[in-house]
Length: 130
Image (tube, rainbow, N blue to C red):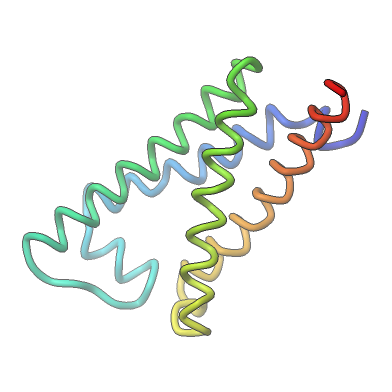
């Protein structure tokens, strides 16, 4: 057994707890945008979209926490969370260094680490099933 396989529950709990901190965007969208990206958007539509974004990210965090305790759903949860985190990282990196000096830079690094860990676990499951 490798490290990722033996520690996947704690990896998922950590990733889930950190991901759930984005509930902040649902509660204080302007402040969340400023701390994450160093910029804000104004208007009712911007607040609605950012709040919805915060809720969706928090749901992914909740899925990771649930999956940590429910091995049967782990593959699906890890795929959904991994794709979500990879998409965010790619979108931020496409902007060059514009957002990397803010919390988005830290989020990109952590998300990419978690994507690698999730992929390693999924590959281990695939090898065991084969």
